[in-house]
Length: 620
Image 1 (cartoon, rainbow, N blue to C red):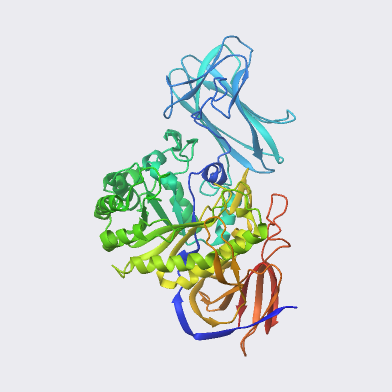
Image 2: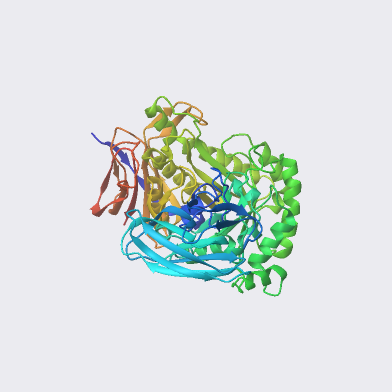
């Protein structure tokens, strides 16, 4: 039998405003977030900069085909540091390099290009073949000696299939290849079209880039200008090589296409205040300034007007490049602030707060007392439960994780109190947050994680003006928490993705008073979560939306019981969207995106809220 909850709503009492930036997103050069999750480039190591791990003379994942001599060579290159050298000793014997398992889609048009150099006349064949050896595209290009030349090609795929792209010579010759590209013509701002559609459906108001930990080893000038000229660099934090094909200009173009604000995190760990100030000038400076002129030369004469700048990432932590103590951070923040605001006094700065998973406020107290007057937002990160290994009792873990927002809400209020003790102008920003188990099980993609994250969104709403900005981590792939799972240009959303969309699409603008009585429970300590009591089984917030509709967000943490929500006299529910599944461990997959909002319309005086669910309810 369902348990009853009688809801009281006071539409005349606005408790706080809800910022549209509360439903922000975050992308980082972390594993497969940018390449190939977001960036619509089919080829990896297109500049032959990835290491030759197997010693075949060819940059991985390229591989040699035919008979000849292969090596990564610095003698002739388009972009630093290597090009792929091929040398054939015989005529009519194929010598080439190839990359396999490239996914093409039916009726999709593709555009490719490559650079080639030879010391004598030669010719290069580009060939794309299916796994059953059917030719998809083939062309031969003459190579003039002693100069690099770029060749382009275009074709349409007649079916969906995986293919191999090869570049080869079949005469006695020596050539160098560099900067090979293959992209779908349907890419939007160089983003996979399906991924762009999924992002737009989230209605993000702000997106943070390029990190994260990566920001503290990223030098922004590596990612501007002609992509073919950009240097590849080792990712000093996450490993691998970054081709830098998706940089500042691509990020801004993507944000403009989406209709959201960009937030840029500068390199605090291995960069300088001057480098950060130059980045501000590149984005916001007039065309007659040094870096504004550079932006214009790259095809963007109008200033970008980037308002939000994050100075450093998790600087308190020993895993972070350039980590330091709180006093040292304050000293360097002042230097960065002065240099950046000298270029643009109107920018808003986010300082790196202490560990958002800890109740220790010492870092935040130091920052607040020393640089609070310079800080617009104090940025913290919230990740839970960080179990590091699979927890032995899944049910106990569920209730602890589902109830985690109650601990984080308390901690966020304590942090907000600290930062406002010295200045009333500083606000809180949760620039990274999500469930993170770190146990190898990918539970971040389960309904359990979505229940927790919906509770976090309710907590964020209740923070009101104290917390105007949050970003869930990551938007695409990156780690198991990425809420859009992207592969070969196709994607699906995790349950948390659909929760984020459900909240953001409602566009809540005001949190209004609602009262109710819910059963509560206790949860044991799990990972970084302490033992907790008095966790509400049902968590409800009421909001006015941008369209002046009354909306409820309801999280039912109970695994067993359904709850009947009795609305106040004169109120009717007209539309109900619910996310749930049969088991809290259920997740979406490539085969089935089953955990999505289920819609119900009508005129309901009361609502039956099923176990382990998140609901959005419009009321009139």
